[in-house]
Image (cartoon, rainbow, N blue to C red; front, side):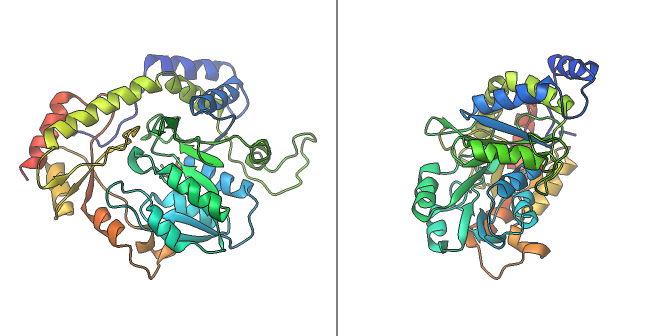
Length: 355
Ligand SMILES: *Cc1c(COP(=O)(O)O)cnc(C)c1O
C-alpha cells in the first residue's frame, strides 16, 4: 500500500529528541521551546513565536489574544479543515463563510468584499494545500475595514507570497505541526506575530492565564496550550532541513505534473509563484468516490478534499457556495511525502489515467 502521507524522520531528529529526553525536561520547560520558537519565527521573518499543543489551539489562542467582543464575526473560507471553524466557535465568536476562487481554491477576495459589514472583525485566510492566498488584496480589504488578519498557515510552511514568507502577513499567523504537515512535532502548532502586546497576551493565555511576574496568580482564565520540550526538539531538528524537505516535495509535485499535465480528465492545482505542496491535489471530472475506491484496490491510498464546512451539522448555512461545492466533490489528494519514489509516482499516475 502506498500511504497518502508519511512523516519524514531522520537519525538527526531521533538524536535531538533523545537529547531533550535525557535533559529531564519532558514537559514544557527546557531549551528547545525557546530555540524552536525563535528559529521558526526568524524563518518566517517575524519577531515572536508562541508554540502551542496543536494548530487548532494556535488558532484559538490567536483569537483569544485579540480580546474581541462576544459574537463579533470572523470570516473564513468555506473550504478548509474543520479546525479553522472550530477555533472560532471555541472563542464564542460568530462565523461567516466565503466562497473560494475557482483557480486558486483559496478564499475569494471578491466574495470577501461582498460580505463586508460592520460586525466583521477578523478574517482568516487559509493557504489551502500550500498555495498562498492573494495577501495584498486581503490586506487591502482588512486595512480599509479595520479587520484583523489571522493567517491559517497549517498547510503552507515555507510558502512565499511576492517574495515574502507566508506567516509574515497576519496580525497573528498560525501553523500546525501535525504528523502529516510539511514539518512535524507529532502534535503541535505555533502563533507568530510582530506585536509585543499580542505576544505577551498569548504567553499568558497559553499558560493557564498565569501572571508573568507573580507566579500562581491568575488574573484571567487561560488554557494549557503548551507544547512539550520533546516535541519542540523534533520541530527544531526538522526546521534545520526545511528547505531540503520543500525542495524534495516540489520535485515530486513536478513529476506528478509531468505525468498528468494535458490530460483532459484531470485538473492540476494552480501554481501560484512561491507555493509549496502539503498534498498533491487534483480534480477529476466526475465519479470521484469511485476513483478513490479503484485506486485503493490498486494499493494507492488517497483522500477526498474537505467537505464544505457549511455542509456539516454544527455549521449548516443556507447559502450556496457554488465554486467550493464543485471543487470539494471532485477533489482527490494523491500520495505525497518525502521518500515517495519516481516509480511510485509513475505507477499512481498510470493507474489514475486508466480508470
Ligand atoms: C491541520 C490543519 C489545522 C489544525 O491543525 P492541528 O494541528 O491538527 O490541530 C488547521 N487548519 C488547517 C487548514 C489544517 O490543515
